[in-house]
Length: 89
Image 1 (cartoon, rainbow, N blue to C red):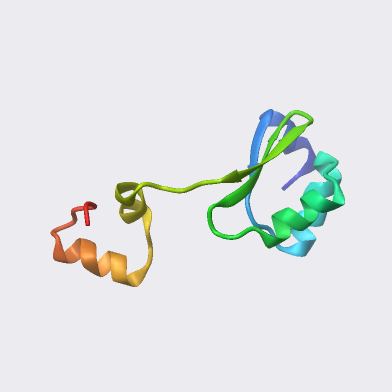
Image 2: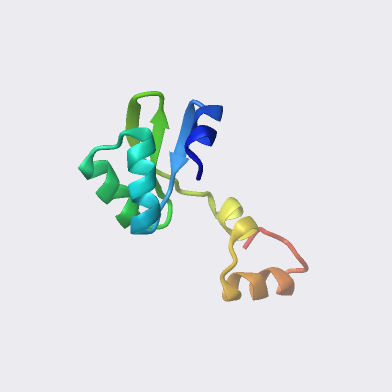
């Protein structure tokens, strides 16, 4: 992520990052130490929403239909194939 590219959008969703990436994002977005910790320890579906200088934690939970439509888990892919490509379990 380049510093100048962060100004292209006021709204940013920051999901889990490796420590070195998170440190760069912390510097660019002026994140607190607790926000830095959050983005390095996020679990699947968790993120930090940054809008200007305001930030909140997000938890994103897909519906069953959304989950099966985007899941890359082998068991879900096999299940979709068995259903002829249907995303409805």
